[in-house]
Image (cartoon, rainbow, N blue to C red):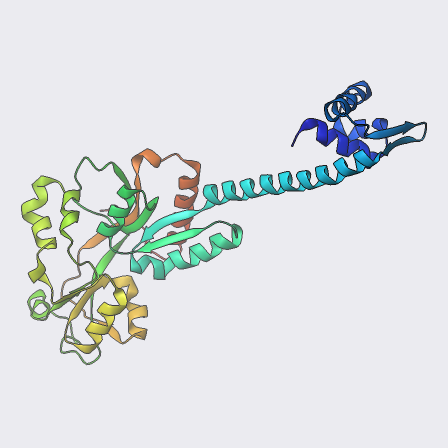
Length: 310
């Protein structure tokens, strides 16, 4: 708001120039000069001056009402900008696998919004390849997932390890695989269900040296009977068939409530690192680092510690 109008409002509300000097932190001669300048600019007399102070003229009353409105609009504008800035600085846009959302991300987000009620929160749920696609596109700032092995070196993403997990095998109640530990051959005799359907556009994420090993296996549509990026759909399918759902073993309690039980293999599955993926260029940004700290703290409360041999 214009400085002369701010000083005018202060004098009008204080009733004298001398009383307004304390609020404005300027000298009395400066205020006297500026009010005369304002009157000259408007070509009207704004104050009636007397030994008892300053009284507004009819022109001054008109200016006072308009200036008060301008002050309110100015204050509202500054407040809106500050709220928008705070939302941009504190807002979260991140990705997560289904497991991590259930295990700790959901509670972390609720706690975050209690601390910052005006900050927008956006969470995209999906497998790690989808999340990586969104990270590189700028749709999210980071994501929590299993580590992606064999990344193309042109993808400058940093992986922050939080824990390690086993890939569990889940089936419907009454499934023939239940009851005793099973060999890999026995398990593989049944169709697999996956929440990571292959998408050919994601092949670009992998280094060429991996193309004939892991990549071709990942993108082989003969490796499963049913695939969907919806965990709910995969659970429904597994409950209704002899399919075997591959998923993080930590979800066993949640799956049991939904009618899926874990198959016990003769040999435990390979441990897989999980953690946070973030673009290397964004490390060090205060907003990103604070989110990483919150995710790490929430994860440590529910996940196994990092294995020393990984």
